[in-house]
Length: 105
Image (cartoon, rainbow, N blue to C red; front, side):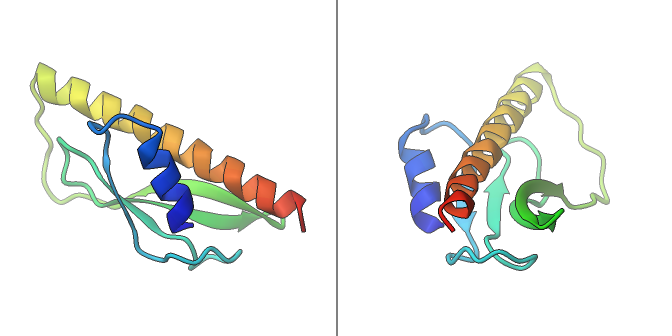
């Protein structure tokens, strides 16, 4: 899975969200394939991970709860919007890669 994330990073702008692979080996299961994402204008802990739904792995994005408010000016808000767009693209990319693996098995 680390190769998938590296492939995604190489094919996208260097200004995108920060991405780190916590669990480098993808195996179908709830505790496998955790990818931590750093949003540039929000300190919310955010990660992408697969869940098994109806017997198939589905990548989902989790935003952990926050204790503090988040106030953003126009620039930071646009940056957050771009980060969320990038995050959605990363999730879709990982889903496509996973679907390809599932189809070959």
